[in-house]
Length: 165
Image (tube, rainbow, N blue to C red):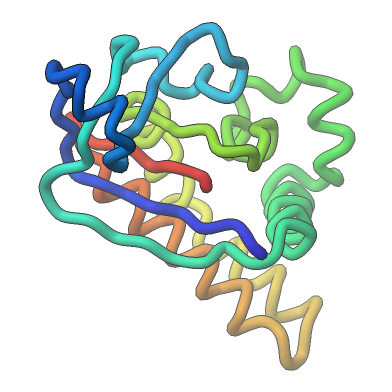
């Protein structure tokens, strides 16, 4: 098992409740669940994923958490745990929304995705330099995950979603 990321460039609200009961695949957005905090710009409901799509494996759950920690160290200069312990200080910093986000089947809407896409674009060289110095052989793996996230967040646009599953 691992963490799969799926992106859709648009979503369409499902109004036929029978389709939901029949078990068709859909995205459920409920603001009662903390893992949906990064999708506050999507109204609650059930959605089909429409438009263009993109998916990738972010690694095993432990591998993804290692990547997230590397991202924190490379860009913020501290391990992810310090970000979690100092939310007030780090909440306006690059990648905060990703570093301080559970990998448990949540999603991110357009507003957060645009901010994170900008973070990925602006910090690519810094991350690559950090990873290439830290790892001799594994650097390509981490740069691929970085690039996949950047592609995914860039695709969300104004009407899409990025889903952790």
